[in-house]
Length: 123
Image (tube, rainbow, N blue to C red; front, side, top):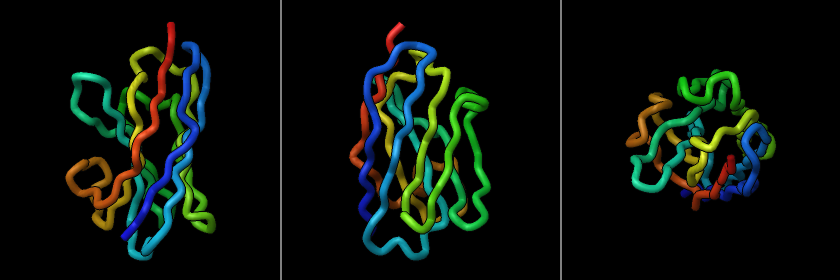
């Protein structure tokens, strides 16, 4: 099994920045990619970004492209989400997830999930 522990959420003003971290432990061998999803109250959980652990290729949703950056430190089994130019519509619970599959943006393909961390952007 894989355990994911997130940190870095909080309250920021619009235009500010946050960096989220997701540390993986357990049987992480075989993980193909890790991704970030978010869920706002009353809305479906949606894909934000993902990174392939081997090679580091990335994919972003249109809503965050140019503002968010995903990165990984394989030696530390940690994935980061740097969020800049935050907007009120970015307010959500952010979840880290891991997958052994190959479809980065498919929520149903992710095997393990973190507990979620709240990101609130005030106007």
